[in-house]
Image 1: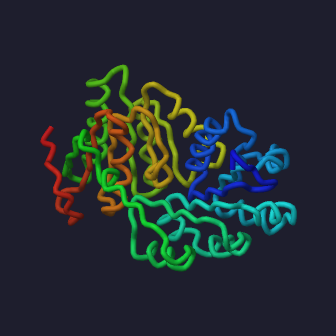
Image 2: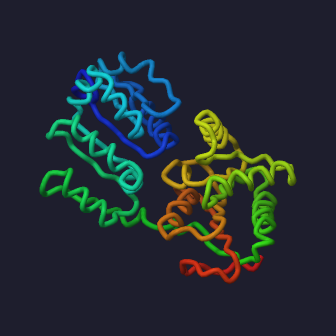
Length: 305
């Protein structure tokens, strides 16, 4: 893109959530600082007013599937620009296939057959392997970085079984313990299985415990999600209650503790624990379970504290 920028879309990156799209776009903007190409974001609630200017210099389009497909279907000029793209990157491909399989299939029809395709995922499922044989040329390469799989070695993992009536207490105590241990550097993410439960706990912690909680889940509006994402990214210390949207590669700097309320799937567990211990930093991951409820066996030590 930088050496010979085309007039149109130089490369296309598709991600499953607007938060991840915005993070990718920020990194792309830094990489393009001294280049003529510029990133263009196509996601719900995000303005693309610089799109026409950027497309004249080989734009890097970063998008979620819905808005991208809508733009391609309603604009002949954008369809033509998309047709010259030399690279397609499907980030978090497993999530894209689970949630956006039909839009992805329609999107491929707008790209030329010589477009290079990259499928990126922390977990390579049978579904991804089958999809790769359909959309990639024969003899495609698989790059497997085993060092990036699972939790980082500097992350301390544990689980806490508790009665249902004490689940909120266990969560509050876990947060209080981390704040006391790192009063000036704590950064905590608590994951919940549903958006409704996440919203309930966030309201309880704000109203009853007088705690400042950032809230990020599907029941928040687009502007509220964007504000929570930006505020937690920028803060030095803070607590984020989330479900789904932040469990994948969205990278919040300096997360010291990841809490998971109730048992996730093994894949969700790995994705969420990966939010802490980034780079060479240390971190902790605690799983809060209900006593007597069968759950996945992750081989974690029990946290008696």
